[in-house]
Amino acid sequence: MSTTNITDLYNKLTEIFNTGNEDAAKDFLIEHIKEFPEDVQKKIMFEFFDAALDKKIDSETQKAQIQKEGMDYLEKIDKAEKSIKDKQKVSKLRSFLGI
Amino acid sequence: MAIEVYKQEQEKIKAEEEKKRRQEAGEPEEDREPLTTAEIIADKEKSDLLGKMLDYEVGPDSEKIMARLKKGEPNEADIDVLSKYREIFDKKMQKVENIKEEITPDMVAELGEHDPSFKKLLEHIDPDKLTDVVQDRLGELAMTDPDRFNKLAKKIEKMQEFKKGDFKKLDDSVKEMCKERNINEDEYMKVLTIKDEKERMKALETFERNSWGEGGWGKTKRFIDSILSNSLSEPGAQKLNWKKSEIDNAFAELDKHKKNIGKMLAVTVKGNDDMRNALANAILGKPTKNERRGFKDAESTPQITESEILKRWEEEKAVGFFDRNGKNKKMWDKMSALEQDKARDYFLDDMKAEQASKRQGGFWDTIFQAIFESFLLEKKASLN
Image (tube, rainbow over all chains, first blue to last red; front, side):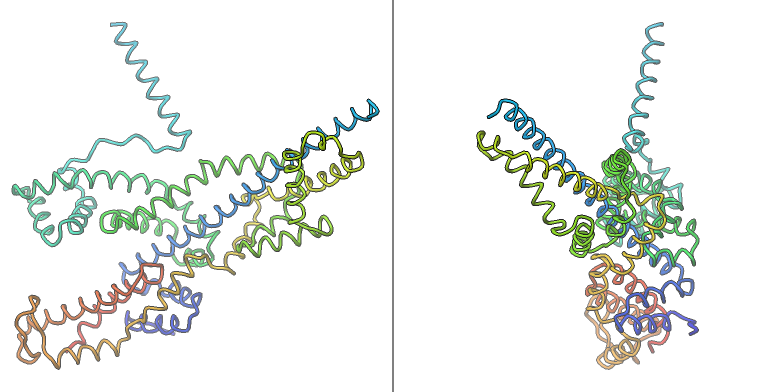
């Protein structure tokens, strides 16, 4: 497809968008970005940047949540181990004392 | 004299220490001297931004104020306006400058690793150019859309946190712990790349079940919790009644849990390309909540087509046009060329505003509005 002006670009993008295929609409924007007027190009680039920032923050936050969960859980395990060791000591003492 | 030299030296040392402390804490450099009006006017970028801020804050009069300022002939009212807004402008500019420093071509390229669409865009647009565009737009946003600018500033601050703040500390301590415990992380990492929390936990359970036999994740949690809660709640006498076999079993269980649970800590994405790609693929398969919301919102706003615009134009023409004050109504063919040109502008402004009022400001709404406005400009010539 050859697009020559903003009306063609707008019509085609609207048509793709109305199919509900977001990836195809994004691909269209990317492939034709240099055909848009300079100020529109800049706005498109900025929105892509902002969306990428959201994704990065999402994945890093998620990663940190998992790590935090893991750390908390490990702490619990350490506490549990200590608790069992205490019980073991008492059990040995009881056995030693024959009670 | 010696005391003066001593004081100066002490101040230098203090300033150096403060600078070092700020660097280590990831805090921005100390604020620079405030910009004077002359400095703002002499710099084209800054004076344009001041004009945009005044336009947003003061309204249409800002154009005349800026013209008088540039000529060096401000009147008393202009000086009042300036004294009110110069400081605000300066603070905004400082924030813009701080954020700009964080947005580098490397940072932009790194974002491509987390977002396949953005990666595709970087195949068409050089990261240096994209960095310049983002940096330029930041200034404009700070002046004309403070809410959006502040949201973006927070995101950039969050990015700094990942690199220097608590997130980094957490990441480092996890890495250290994995190293200490000699943990193999790869298999578990695959589970961690699942974006959806419910699905991830489900996969986690399967993974744990495979590693530990029947019971899985939930059982593990209950087991640990029961040991802890029993030791806290049991009466003293009962605490003594654990049998040796029970203790041995509990130790054996704990050993298994410790061995496997450690893998959970192994989220060292950096330096592991396979895992990083897996994470990116997982994200590709499941767009973020924000993105979904943006697309749905935009979908619910019907895009006005070319034929609809022309139809609306013909309807307006049929009933005639009021002037901007809404007083005198004239039919199209009775209007002068200048009046007709104004009528076209009013019509297009109304269309622009009408469509903008339906949008909610996500990714697609913003892009569509920008394209729509450009499209309307192109249509102006065909409104006859």
